[in-house]
Image (cartoon, rainbow, N blue to C red):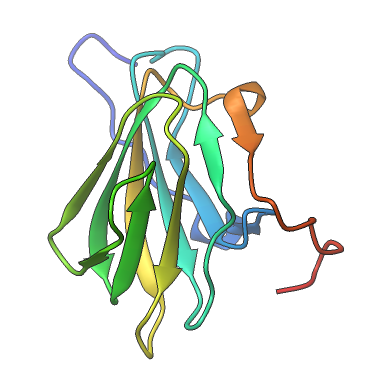
Length: 133
């Protein structure tokens, strides 16, 4: 980053499908800025992400478009839509379902920044083979 800042342009062609059952584009995740990471997540209609938690990292989902049902810890599931923010404490089990007819798209904002080794799948269902939606 320069003295006055930096503008980063996401590589929209670098969207990856994850075992969590969603598509991710990393917008900001670098050791040079360890306090925060931002990714764009996309969940297809009818899909629920796997139960997971992120050890030692707080997460927020800022819903951009679509309709979802967020589940965090033992709290009651809540319907979410554009402009809603889901606050997820470090280590809290979480998942989100796309309950609409279009893609559910949200920003996942992590503090400190997301690191793959902090991710833990806690879903009781076995993982499906790679490439299975």
